[in-house]
Image (tube, rainbow, N blue to C red; front, side, top):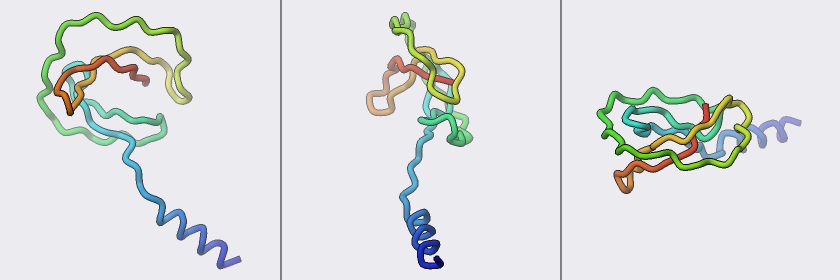
Length: 92
């Protein structure tokens, strides 16, 4: 029994940690974006974000919000690779 408990503890401790939240500019403000509603959002640093260009949100087909969220909407998120705002569906 102790061997099984020790093996399970070793597997849990050896599992790689996955950062599922990151700080990104969303419509000109720094916000934490998480891939799951149960993740703990980090405190994002105070950063000056570029103002997104005026744009009309794309038409989104009706979709059910993921578990743990109440609503989803298209928002402009700054892509750090291209330094351009892109439309993303964000839920909260």
